[in-house]
Image (cartoon, rainbow, N blue to C red; front, top):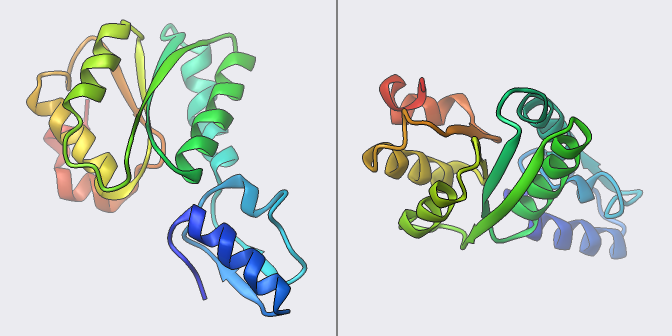
Length: 172
């Protein structure tokens, strides 16, 4: 029952299929779990990267903030979230200017935030989750980027992260 990371979940899903075992996934969000990675013995439910992309990406692409840059976690979930959101943003008329990739469990986002700031994109899309997203938002606030001229789109933001960071940091 369940595996939290998308990369690991793809491996477990395939392994379970070769052993004819059932695997049920609710935490990982890579769209590949429901598409090309899907097996007769796997269940992937809750959200996926395509659903997240459609809700946030359409807004970013259609609004006055038509240029977006990503800060992306460097594994399956981040890649899928960035790619799916890029597709939606571009279909809505927006433009993606690039990305800065960081390792999982990163502790220093200063260079990634600097690259995003230098891009002059109107929207900085955070294609990560959990502690990485919280760290990026917290450091952006300390650097005076929140609030600022660029808007942060925390693509996979959950309420518990808002609670841990506080409304002062997350309301902008």
